[in-house]
Amino acid sequence: MIDNGRRKFVKKGLFGLAALPFGMGVLTTKAFAALPMLDPEAPNAKALAYTPDASTAASHPAFKAGSDCANCNFFNAETGACPLFAGTAVEAQGWCQAWVKRP
Image: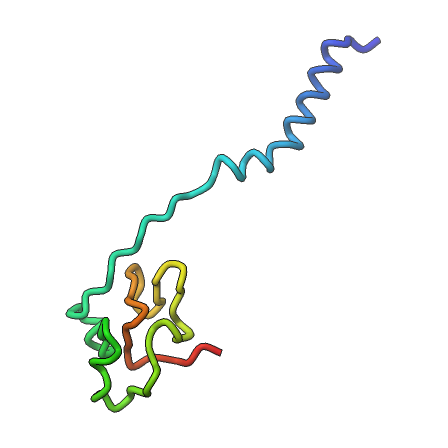
């Protein structure tokens, strides 16, 4: 005959295992720190002619009117990140010569 104490233990254990994935979502939320802003004097910024203000790039041969980071395919609006400048954020009104129109 099975002991009722053991039966309760097994039931509660199985319930706990079933609830574990739901609890993990609450326990593992990450707080993301804001990325540091890209320094326009950084070597990678200079290589791509990055400027934090697109209006100052009008004289650049690759500049197209209306192009800025906010409407670039590479720009992540939630974080301000650009994969071309890893580990840093860029200004939404910025511009660089790698600009590609967002589809």
